[in-house]
Amino acid sequence: MENREKELIENISAVNSDVADAVARAGRKPGEVALMAVSKFHTASDVEILYRAGHRSFGESYMQEALAKQEALAGLDIDWHYIGGLQSKKAKYVSGRFCAIHSVDSAKLANLLNKKANSLGVVQNILIQINTAGEEQKSGVSEEQLPALIEEISDYENLKLTGLMALPPFFGDAEGARPYFARLRMLSEGMEKLFGIKLPELSMGMTGDFRVAIEEGSTMVRVGTRIFGQRPG
Ligand SMILES: *Cc1c(COP(=O)(O)O)cnc(C)c1O
Image (cartoon, rainbow, N blue to C red):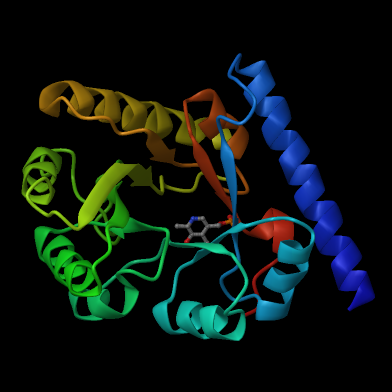
């Protein structure tokens, strides 16, 4: 436990300083990029260690696991983010329980999230996940489908669209992801112009490529392995 505490705190400090370094090199302002610690497959106790060390933002990808951790850590002021694929039928369990849901990719899902948020009397922050590389097996909307989805979401009073998210193909080489990050940023700027809206969040960059994502405009990097180590299983 003590060793784990030392390890986690060292890891997150190193990531925080790499993020700050990348922000400075990119000529951006300190504080422009938030670090989300992706705790999927890791324990509630790991999350609690980082929380006690002052970290607040955590990301989870699997609904049951996420809800179990929320319950185990109820009372702590954690900013939970939902970043995993989400089936429409699970929308009602997720809406209203996360500070943002990053993986919205259909009007049907948005509609159900909105209904649930409405019944709870809350406004749920969401991001739209884009399948930037057009990969068949990945969730996310295509660029072509994006305007129609934004239009649809603009009717939902209990959803607030804050930005776009992407999970580009993994190249093992961060430079390979750069064009997809750049593309997401362009797309976001295009949608801001088209709809006259603000999309302040660009959720992009993981352990292997967050430096490049920051250079390309990320406002939120989602880092798991570099903080917690390899995921078990
Ligand atoms: C697991 C996951 C991450 C974290 O990936 P690492 O490579 O471990 O940093 C980030 N984003 C999403 C959507 C994930 O599912």
